[in-house]
Length: 208
Length: 105
Image (cartoon, rainbow over all chains, first blue to last red):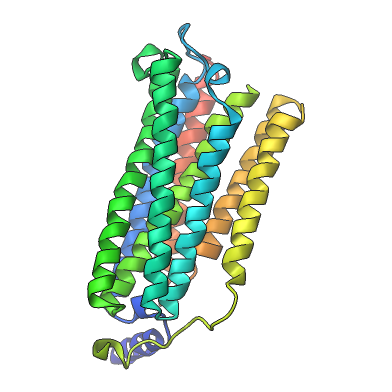
């Protein structure tokens, strides 16, 4: 028992800072389990949407509503924000507090841009195109799936901002390193969900 | 700075972030490829859907390995198993629902 504890802590000495304590290490594993549960949450919304997609009840359909340019703008902004967040994690590994904060600030700005584009898209559907959430099963499924993702991104913006404040106050420690790494995992996860929204909602809507 | 002086070493060397840049370029390339397959080509619907879902899975794997460092940690078996279980339930949910509802659509 003592021998295995020793090897575990020996292993940790050669790991990045966020894994340097047993607590940090376990919390990161726990966060992966949380992300797996989030994946299941989104899968139920995807299943619902895909079943209801053809139930348009005379309201505008996917083909009527979806336009390539705004969707590509949202997609590119989110993909680039995932990249800048990844550069933040790289600066974290280099123990460069200023670099980490700078990339996280860029990530927050791109996140805000994404939310702005998405809000504009929702507004144009609901108000200009006469296709609010209540008008068909397809639109309910659409707004609930995309709204849940958008709510996650909004939460992520607040969370990254809170981590930026902590990093500015405390610098990179074992605790703030773990928090910065975890919020990065969350942000990349939202990008993964968006990739499937882009494919299963927008591209599929343009094809079928 | 005192409190972590003796803990972990700096693990990333200075230099150009190739891994992240390649991840970004691949993500953008796969996104535009999927758009081109869906809009530019007029393949049969089931072929298009298979291709774009395949591209989405590849892109998810890029995020997982190039940005999320899924293979890191002192004991990665727990997070990998948890993730695989999550992916399994998600797949069973989506594929199972579509399979059942296919008969009523």
